[in-house]
Image (cartoon, rainbow, N blue to C red; front, top):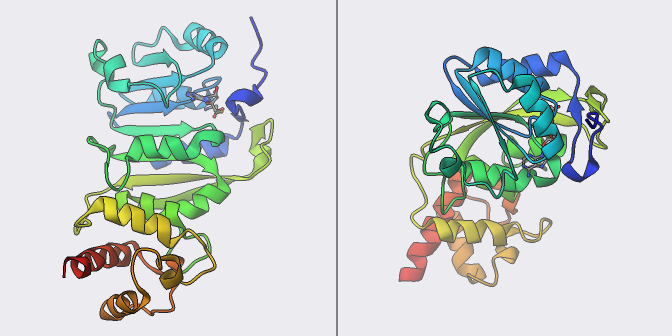
Length: 275
Ligand code: SAH
């Protein structure tokens, strides 16, 4: 059988740091949980999860790795391995006959970095279509640059459209940094472990689709002031008035507004349009 030579095509980088594995598993706070793992690879994280979780369902795209994993871990009755592309998979449908693995409540994964955005979106949903059954927590090893955006605070350079979209749906925190040398082969970038906790939004946007579009447009040109980026949808005077009403500096750029301020801005602009 093929050895576990990492394949570039599937963004395979095997984590080899025990310390990083400890941090990931600890951050997941496992006890009686059903865990979903995306991209188990050689199973280094999977073995840890199996020791602490009630059940682990892992989705791996690489057939050869699946054969190997099935050989090594297939006998464990709290382990279910599904071969396929996580992005394409209807997980709920796949799990209909596996009662023990249905409705996993946590995600723990060292994911392929080339599809980080789509994975996060599939796990959390979007502003206008949040996940119907949100996970309790999602612990992910991602590239550092993406991690920085996920937990960025408003006003910081890293705070972008992704920060608003994800933080609208979940609380995000940094667990630890993981240097490139902790992987084989080392990726070109450093990495970090983040934890996302999907949350109920206390004051959700009146029209989530509107908020989604507003955020997209607001961040369309990073250097510009918000009022310039939004010129196409709202005249400057109205916008300045709305911003002042909300006690937001009219000179603000998109990255200066908190998630709450984005929600308020969207709601207020909608009201203006109704007049
Ligand atoms: N968790 C392992 C491997 C991480 S590398 C470790 O920590 O060492 C990323 C893994 O995701 C690889 O095993 C790769 O084959 C798998 N993968 C890549 N694209 C995938 C997809 N679309 N769906 C499921 N798994 C995928």
